[in-house]
Amino acid sequence: MQTSVRNMGTINRDPRTGRFVKTFTLSYEKEEGIVTRTLPAAGIERVGSVVARLAERETVWNVAVFDKDGEDVTFEFRCFQD
Image 1 (tube, rainbow, N blue to C red):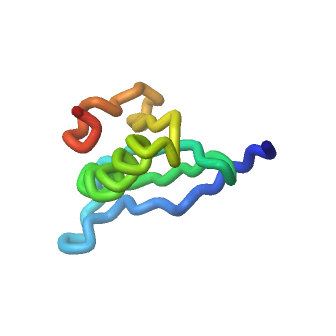
Image 2 (cartoon, helix red, strand yellow):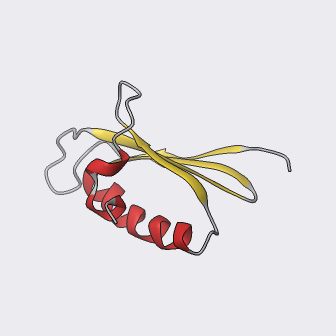
């Protein structure tokens, strides 16, 4: 299996206020490689709920969320607390 990293983009402004928001990096593996997305907390919850369901079906694995300092904060998000 060839591993590739795809960065799906960064969102660091609140679309409603235009203010900068704290972002987190969601990372997971699938057959095509490693996928990373940098999103605010609300985005992690939205995308994370889908990723969590895929992980239950063993379609993705090695799911993790990191803060800007590289600390693992995966289980601080409701979507990963099952």
